[in-house]
Every structure is written in C-alpha cells, then in structure tokens.
Amino acid sequence: MGYHQILTIASIFLLSTLILNVNNATTQRLTSMYSNEAAIDASGIAQSLIDEIQTRAFDERTIYKMVTTTDSLTVVKLVGKDAGETVSTQFDDIDDYNNYTRTDSLSRMGNFNTKVLVYYIDKNNPDTQSAVRTFTKQIDVHITNFSLPDTLKFSHIIGY
Amino acid sequence: MQYWLDIVGSFLIGGLILLILVNLNLSMNTSAAENLNTNISQGNLVSTTYVIEHDIYKIGYRITGEKITVADSTELKFYTDIDNNGTKDSIHYYLGNTSEMFLTFNPKDRLLYRIMNNETASSSNIVVDFNLTFHDSLGAVINYASLKNASSRQKVKTITVSLFVEPAEPIDGIYQGAEWKKNLIAKNL
Image (cartoon, rainbow over all chains, first blue to last red; front, side, top):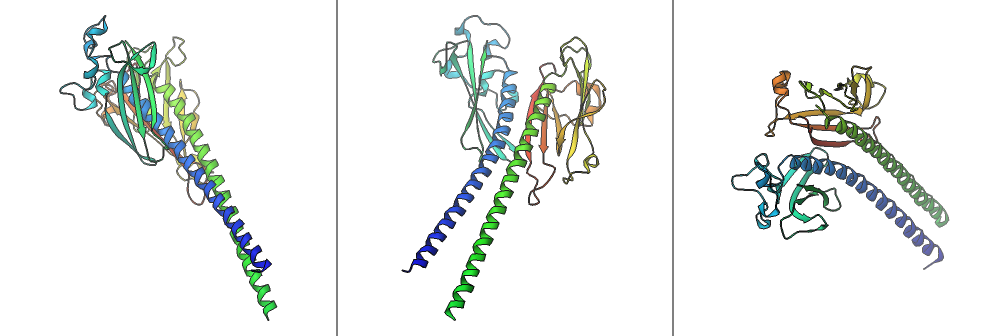
C-alpha cells in the first residue's frame, strides 16, 4: 500500500470521527432540551396533584371528628381508597390516593403517567416508611414520560 | 493522462469534503440556535408561570363578597390582597391581539397582559396561547357561558391554566416552543 493511500484512509477516518462526534453532540443537546421541558411539565403536573391531595382530610377517621391517638387512625395495611370510592373526586382523605394512577396528556410532550404512593412515616426518621400508624404521612408522586431520562419523584409530607 | 486524472479526482474529493464540512458547520449553527431559542422559551415559560401561580393561589385572600369578577377562556379578573396590606387589589389577566406583535416573525405570538388595580396595561410576557378552564368542587368543568353569572363564578374551586410559548423567530421554519399546564387550587375559593 502506497504512502498516499495510507494518508487518504487516515483522513477519511478522522473526518468520519469528527462527523460522528458532532452528530452525537447534537443528539445529546436535543435530548437534554426535551428532557428539560418534560421536567418543567412534570413538576407542574405533580404539584397540581399534590395540591389536590392536600385539600382532603388527613385520614378517614379525621373527616368528621378530631383524633388524639394514632390508634384511632386507619391501620397501615388498609391505607388506600375506601369502599365506594372509584374516582378521585370521591376521595375524601389523603391515603385514598395510595396507588392512584392518572395519565395527563400535553400536546407537545405527550402522555405523563403518574402514580401516587401514600404511607405513614415517623417524623423523627422521615426517610423510611413507618410500619405503625403515625400523625405524619408522606405523598410520593412518580411521573414517567418518554422524554424523561428516568422516573421523576416528588415528595410531600403532611402532618396532622 | 494519469497525471490529469489524479488532479481532477483529488479536486472532486477535496470539494466533497469541503461541502461536508460546510454542511456540518451549518447544522451545528442550527442546532445551537435551536438550543438557544428553546432555552429562551423555557425561561419565558417558567417566569410567566411563576407570576401566574403566585397570583392565582392568592385569589380571594382577605376578600369578602365576590372574588372572581371575570372568568373566560383567555381572561380572568379577580380580587385579592396581593401585598397583604389590608387593601383590596384587583388583578386582571387577558390576552392581547397578534397584531400588536407585528414586528416579530411569529404570526401567533401575543402579549399576556397583567393589570393590577386598573393601572396602565403592562405586558406580563409574550405567549402563543393562554387558556383557562374552571372547575367546581367535584372537578366538573364549568362552561364559559354560565361563568358570566356571578353565582356560577362562586362555584369555581380549581383553575386549569395552559400556557404555550414560542420564540419570535423560527429556526429552519420551526418555532421551538414550550408548553405548561397546571391545576391551581386557590385556598380562599
């Protein structure tokens, strides 16, 4: 193989590498642009849902009367929607939203799938789920969208 | 003859490489401009939504009597004590006409006005669309015709705000926009 041929192959290789790198950078920039917009939309959707949940009573047992001991609250394994509650407008307390799912559709970014988890937490150790009833509940809103690189999680703590 | 073929061939290949590089440079510029436009749109969107959220969450704060006086698809007027000084303030949001933005390339952009206490109109931001939907306590949509009555406006508990922004100039014929939608529940409604 002649000297000129080696030089030609090397220059084609360098040019191809340059083009691939530029394309890669452009794609990454586009992905980041869309994921930023999806994150803005997702935070609006999550905050809307958290606002809605906050309008409900702390617990099924606190809707009509005040409770003074945690033993009066809904037991941990029964946290979730109550009998006869099928749609969110029928939910009357925070933990009715446990395992609630909803899909919001936006014209640009498509569907945002939301899942809510509600559970008791110990106020002195808020990072872990409590196995017993407490006067503090945490709401986790998980949102997925095709433009988001991963599931976004928004948390909110409500005390009684 | 071989000598001339080499020269013509190298010129052709050199020209093609030059074209590839120019095209690469152009697409990099387009991508950078798109990125800039999107960042501007997203920045505009976030700052506009911040003001809207701040105001709507406070509808009816320290107000007795009628809280929302105008409720329509692109217009909202309400009372609140926005600066917490004991004096009733009115805030009026409405969309301007596209003709007001005749100097921009975008045919759809318009001003979203925010007027406080009947002061001179000042624009809040440039948007392409601003839409309001009103819901009662059961989440049902209240139609715009009935919202002309004060009794229907009193039923409003949640306001869904949709906002769409686009830059003034297109890149490759496309306006890189950004969209936002949120249900706002004012505590005093």
